[in-house]
Amino acid sequence: MTTSCSACLDAEPAARALTPEPEPDPAPSAVTDKAHWAAIGSLSMGVFGLVTAEFLPASLLTPMAADLGISHGAAGQTVTATAVVGAIAAPALPLLTRRIDRRWVMLGLSAMLVVSNLMAALASSLPALLLARVLLGVALGGFWSLAGALALRLVPPDRFARAMSLILTGVSVATVCAAPVGAWMGELWGWRSAFIVAGVVSLLTLLVQALTLPALPPRDHADLRRLGRLLARADVRVALLAVVLMISGHFAGFTYIRPLMENVTHLSVQAISMVLLGYGIGGFFGNLVGGYLAERSERRAIVAGGSLIVLLAGGLLLAGSSPLVTAVAVTLWGFAFGAFPVGFQTWIVRTAPDQTEAAGGLLMAAFQIAIASGAIGGGMLVDHVGALGGPLFALATITLGTLLTLRHGPRAHRA
Image (cartoon, rainbow, N blue to C red; front, side):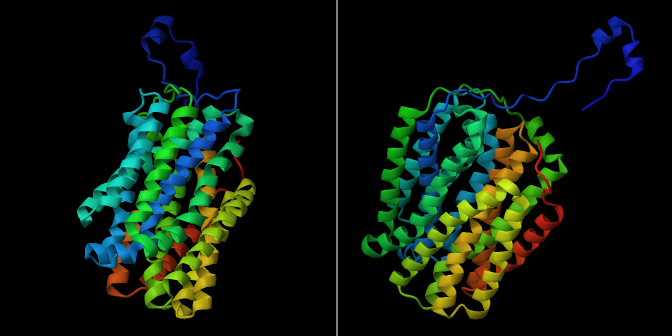
């Protein structure tokens, strides 16, 4: 911001009139005195559908690859496609839809999710499956870039934390259900059945959102200058870099966890489903504990989760052939990861509370870049080194991200 000087106050009125006033920063998203809890619930359903569709390839990687006649690394690029498109869509959609009622934007994104699941279920080749995942990336990026800003408009300010907690419950439930249920359904009825059920859930979500979301005229009027101003902030850049390092490591390990359990630990499909269920339950409680920690210090929440995953990745590298070690490590990995979403969201919102849509878009873009990096890097290591390549990638990048957050993360809450 600029400051006034005494010379400026003594200038001629006409000269001052010819000098353009600096354009003020856009105001934060308007808030409401009425709580639309049904609409918040529909957003939670949307999160559940999106995260379920995003996580399904991790539990279905082996049958998908066998059915389509491709390698595990190639099948893992279905995650990459979603992530790359999501990274582009997250900052772009608030700009492209800045004149469209947010209710219709969210309904359009939910409709894309329905179509994506249907296309995935019918895909007969890798390109067809990748196209379905591209649509998912658009829906995922757009949804997450707008979710926080919409929550501010759907509930009073003092209920915002509760609303975001409810929305993120969709992540917790999807984390519990998506991987184990997907693996179980893939074994009984084929991998396509999991995408059919995900499509039915997304269609139900679309109907509930159509009934509960109120009109939400655009108010933030996002533009490229706001994104530029955000990226110029050192604390924003540190947060985004930490996201890229730590989330890429997590997804390198998680995306290729099934090949590890099959080829290194030699678990049966039933045992893999149970371990993935443990991962989901761990993630559910990790979200709760992560939220509790992030309310007090998002830096400590992220560092604690990252430190635990580093130890678990090391354990898998040293003793991944042990069923007990693998089961415990995967379960605790899910618990540790639960601190990341709420920790990073709290970090970025407290860094830029006046630019929620733009900040949410940048955070989502960083998440998707990280997911793509993890899927590509992990896939290369899995194809050339073996199934332990995922934990190896995670060990390196999450160590760097944890150290970065420990050194440069936020030390105190900001007003």
